[in-house]
Image (cartoon, rainbow, N blue to C red; front, side, top):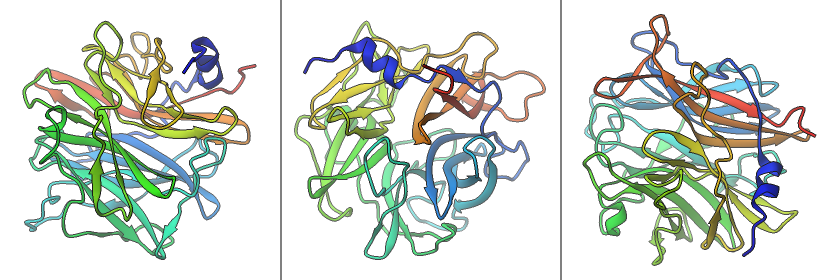
Length: 346
């Protein structure tokens, strides 16, 4: 498949970055988001915009919901997947919401939630140990009939694990993207094949008829790392939408070269064979900017002709910052959810 790279980059770039966070952690001890927020997933529901996201409190992830009327100003709404205290469940340390089942894959249609069997469905991942993304995560499924989206019910067992997977995923799973196409469900996810840093993360796919039972694609990973590129170490966090005008699938994932994580754009005709553009779609920022270190973990929304690109932005932690995440020993970051758009782009 031939891809005119500069044309694709120009079409989906979002050069107008907000200089302040769209959503920040609280910095309040005991809150789910005391250390920072991450992993946005933005959609429209019952006349308002919602942002599912995860908060980190030094122990693990919990999933929250924020609300907005204009996609610019956001306020905290609720914690929807809290930590399960005094439980022996596999997801007791924390549950990180990844994706909700949507009505349409079309990128120009604002995302709205789809009911299946009278329920809304969310897929999430959970790490087994305390700490920042500690241990090998597996996937779980939750549902709700609550139109406020506050009360969720989790299935008893994981729906997808790294056990019996390929070498590339044998040490744990990460964030996934869920879509419906061609009469089946597709789950794209990144995973690691080594538990010792610096590991690689790559992206694969599995399919299902019922959301509960999944079959791995034999050609995984469908989006591998590539030496000498900005995705030489990580090819992660798929965010896949369909461009009906060109008949192409788009992945707004991210790549890591060992130093910076940057948003990427990949293009496909069939969801299995992908062409990744050579340049980052969402480059990391300059010193002092919110995304000085990383610009990654995307969620994209088109509303009234404007493309809103939400992502996790990371810069070094400074004295006076409300929140701090120690990603590795001695590496402290200020992590927030940032917004870039194509407003003003001709």
